[in-house]
Image 1 (cartoon, rainbow, N blue to C red):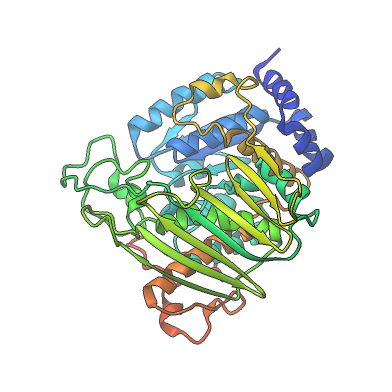
Image 2 (image 1 turned 30 degrees about the vertical axis):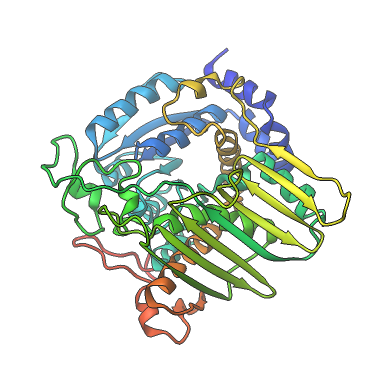
Amino acid sequence: MDLFNINRRRFLQGATASLALSTLGAYGMDVLHQGKTWRVALIGTGWYGKSDLFRLIQVAPVEVIALCDVDKNQLAAAGKLVSQRQKSGKTPKLYGDYRKLLAENELDIVLVGTPDHWHSLQMIDAVKAGAHVYVQKPISVDVMEGEAMVAAARKYKKVVQVGTQRKSTPHLIEAKKNIVDAGLLGKISHVEMTCHLHMRANGNPPVTAVPDFLDYEMWTGPAPLRPYDGLPHIRWWRTFKEYGNGIMGDMCIHMFDTVRWMLKLGWPTRISSQGGIYVQKEGKSNIPDTQSAVFEYPELNCVWSQRSWGTATNPDYPWSFTLYGEKGTLWASTMQYDFIPQEKGGQKIHKDVIYEKEKYPEDLTEERIELNAAPATRLHMIDFLAAIEKSGRPVADIEEGHISTASCILANISMQTGRPIVYDPVKREVVGDREATGLLTRPYRKPWIHPDPKKV
């Protein structure tokens, strides 16, 4: 039996298979049975780029045609790993410039796993080249990038799935169905979202020469060119607002996106935020170590609280969201959920994350894998492929990813200006605030050109 059939059989035996059937219907599982081999490329072969690709390989017949990375060492290592994981055993073609990769290959799917400041250009160029795209969150570093990404996906009629895989997390799907949708919470009029993880990289590494194996100019791309002070991979780049939007853009988007999905929420009516570097002042990091925000809806506030220092409010839920209803409360995270009824003597409900270690033993040897997220990402990939097959919208469609990403970016603009933000997505402006509207687009470093939603 070949590798794909083994992987398909294991998926069908796994805990996520029933969820695939219930949430995706026949289309979802048909993807596993079809004879088509998807031609795939990955741009950005770091930690999560490879993780996404390997989850796709586990659930669908793919041929990884090409890989792209500006770090030659990381790229070569990824090529070797892919040759060991994919059915053909072939090493993909290796590129240092994603534009050349797109020009030289006919692709069905492009995965974008680069740092945030590259997502927009690469996603837009990939759909223009004829590929469907799976792009990591947050989708953009400014609001107009996101508007352009949605416009490009619609113009070129391509499916774009965002890596907000909480929507495909088995125990959270269950919580939505059995707790929220079933009405156990009653009217929900307050939501709290938190991240108290000590994840803000900091320090004062010296400026040094760029190593020969890294194209730092291309790594920086449209972002400001910082003096090189070590490999930017994993957490170091995230600690600078030149490349992203801090922990707000990295972690709040996951929780806020999940809350919006569970409660069927669109754009917030108003957003406000406060924060700064209050405690961890000793290093180079310029993102807040403390931040709060309020995303307002009619008779509902979604409140975000982030600290990268101190202890968590609830040690069992250091990164989580809490839905407060008139009939009860739901605590939820990537690891578990707990329903606590308001009624005295009511039944509490607890559910833990689903693992599939025994079904996918290769997960156990994969470097830096998030084992708790692997089943969710597999289901997310199946949903992505099913949307392509039926020319539909995936569960984490680019427009939904844009609303969640842009809302977090708007919170940062509120923090920067000291004023609440009301965004008009039709006019693409902050209502009554010319300065804040100017902040919807970040300046690009030459020769890179910022995408325009009217001209993609």
